[in-house]
Amino acid sequence: MAASDLPHQLEAALKALYGDYVATDKAWANAETPPVLIVVCNNTTTSRMIYEWISGYCDNPEVDEGKLVWKAGNLPMFANVAEGKPISRRRTILIDLAQLNRATLSPASSEDARDEIDAFKKELRQRDPSRDVDKVDDAELLREVMNTVGRKGS
Image (cartoon, rainbow, N blue to C red; front, top):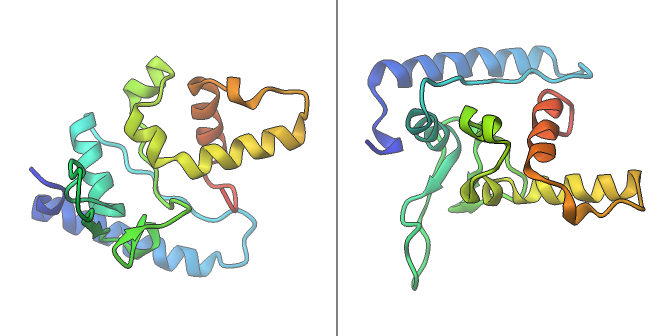
């Protein structure tokens, strides 16, 4: 099943939750901590499908030559794709329990979060100039992601 083929009931539920989120975001416009939307799924296949439906995805990732085709996400505030290409700062991330248990990022997750990883390493370098940020492991990156959910600008 492709990300574009979510069951109607699931799609309707996500759109309803999104509508509530948009209203809450407007109501909290001046709040120090913005609202967050966390979607929990029963398995990694489902989570990947919902992630792609929400944020957008590459429709032909195996293309060696030619242009990649990017599909827009269905929830604009959480879209990672705009105007046919990925945006530089992701609004939606995918973390699955298997990653947390292994404390390793899959290659796809590492690439999806490349901008955030680079920003974290830059911030870490500023906090502790003596630290070798190239030795930051996946476990530390995942902890940082989980610790910054809901933090303004994160």
